[in-house]
Image (cartoon, rainbow, N blue to C red):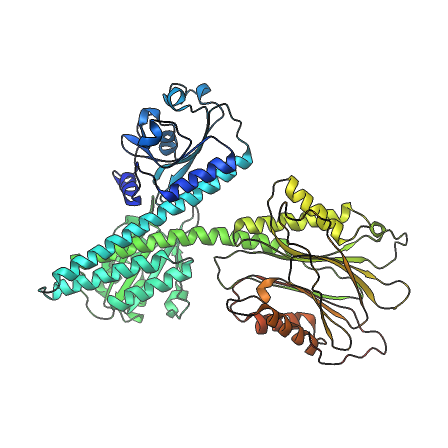
Length: 629
């Protein structure tokens, strides 16, 4: 294979220059190389960027001299260039035995035998280099090692993109500084250029920090509206697979009726926005007569309904095809000169980058949310108990948590009871896996399932034995899941205390469960062991027991209910206990909703999982309102 090619001449090399990285040590890139070497246990690891005639190593571990001092080699010694050329990972157990690499001087000169390289990209279709792990002997790479390397490459790519965006910000600031220097004796046109430069500076800052499509839509509206003074700002995005359509991003702050009436339409529809996307060029509309002649009847009707006299549709640049179009409309004749055309093109570019990032985040978050919802199944019906659950996601839609609840009956035979008609023993758990990403959601599903399996495999044992088995599996399988949980078994009392249930629980560093007794007193079940963390807990888990007489109410919850910046967790737990005692007789579903609204507020910063259980009051049992923690 030859030198790395480029889909757009100069595009890949320009992106490389914008990272600011070359043949010099960079602390951040060296950190990625060290992570690869440590986690995969390899003698060499490189952050390799492939330039036009050489490869450079801003991040490096284990490379011998003279290469270590130079931090570069010619392309003749580059296996990473094959990753750049193909755009795909290159995994070689033995580079000497692969026809693509067997003649490479990197084998004798650098000692490269086992090689695994993952692409590093700039998010705009350009592969800049690779993050590679290198062994000096043949190496059979495991699927887990390759997954870890791919995750690290994704993080390294994100760092490269951040540096490119930062360079854009610096350029925008430099443009503003130049414009300010020229503005002293400038005419109105120079002052306008300064205003446009300021707009692009704000756009670079504001759109670089957006996380979701709604946020992008809001920022674009505010940016364009403050400087260009349009009467209408719209954003239209391409969606769908082979049957490609356009979707108008409806403004959550109050769009026009047109925004919903014509929310979706085909890419080949006779709309100026669709034409701008199809032809990848800016379309300007200056009169209704032209709209009536060149486009569908509803276009002219919409133009008139919005009171517009001028409109411009600017394509959002994508890797292959435009991602959509930015639309600005004015209620007066508006001349778009060459300076404003350049400003709109730059604004569309910033918007496109923000849209790509938002789509990536939205897709990953949606997948994780769907997985969470699928795992958080309905609770069983266990007569005569009253059981309810609530799950509320964090207000920030880009966060995915590892919170969960679970409840399931254990077979009476598994509890050592021969009587198959005996009431079922109920297993309850609420937990929180550390992290706010796809990995946390995935680990949550695995931990939840493993805890169920442990309960069934250790028939007749208590909840502490099940959690201990879960910890053993977590360590032995290398899942590295960490977090907190409460796991409990609820068993009906068979003789004394008719109508009562015995609660047995173990707590792995989780917020204390709350129990409201029939007289309204609130117990905080504070006793707990260390949190769930591989290798941290070497002692058997402890178990605790409590009798729940008729009329008792139990609440398990995750820390998202009671933790907030600047708040006191103990005070929030006390307030939760008072609400439980005051409203203990309400339907549980309504009670959980009210507690979440009052304690966590309308915009919780973390996911919340609640599980409440009420033992029905027997004849003659009375409840006294009040009580405290």
